[in-house]
Length: 413
Image (cartoon, rainbow, N blue to C red; front, side, top):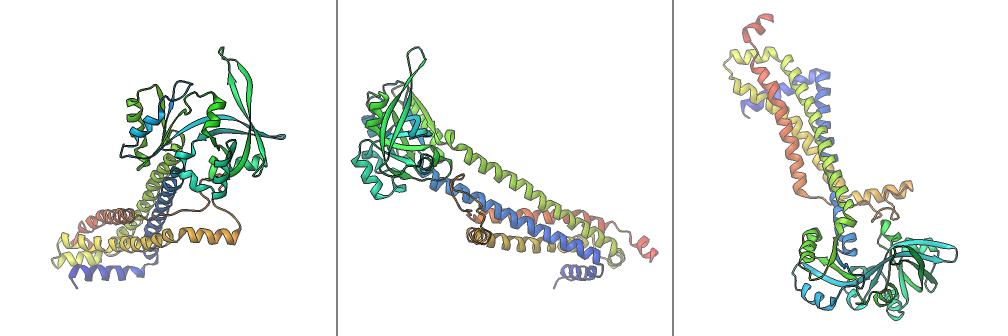
């Protein structure tokens, strides 16, 4: 064992005689461990939400849309689908119409902001099809007046399969005054559930029926896109929209649902800053521990300097002594954080069954469980941050130890 290790171990063992120093030392280790564990856990939760957003919500909603400025609809949309499908970024394209109206069943009414008209020839390859059962698909295909409702919409209207609902669509005259709404009777053929607030906003009907009702001459109001990378949608939609040969509006999912992704990134940043500060506070305890250890070991340090120990040796001894607290805390925190992040969903489910309290409600959020995805690069970064801050915390006390005057110190003893 080298002299530095021997001295660091002797100093560390000796300080245990002072209970207060031992308490401060233990609290610094616990603080670093707690900061690392919570940081890894919360980052994994944010990663889980981001993964579920991408794999659940973004497989259902369109990544991008273009829709005609002309109220008559999108001209020659079939040929546009053909050439736009050659773009390697594009996974699928489908024509659509969209309306906002009011659904009524008896004395119950429910606003439906997104009643989308779809063409089953193109929608067979859409992600939302996987959300409904085979019987609902078959009923929808057979019934040109069929409508598929979001689960929350169905509950609000208290309807079931086979019921008729009345769709009221607002109309505006040439002088911009409102006219009597259009009335369309539709047959409920089933429901679709995505989770969260979308279930209370969506519905699907046949594009041909929707186009006839809305007066869209071309048959399609716009095109909906799905891309290989949803996060490339803003750039891709601008390129497609600017190159389009008609006047169109363009939109992408970041305009409609982007607040969810932005919230995740904001929370991630806040968590990183807050828990890094927690680790830094724990590192201040390392400074306090070493400063008190230096004060307690003044005579021993003076004797070492008298025997010829150089400042470099003394610095290494106290840096190593303080780094042990940071190393132990980091190892313990990383181990606990990785363990909790790996089994978080199962732990949360167990607590929900035990307490009867649900952390995430499907009526509010797009998922009803607590997700977690552990990314090892973030674990490594967290460990490096904790170790670096722990090492930096040892520099001042170590330098202070070299400034002890042997003659003055030994003279006092």
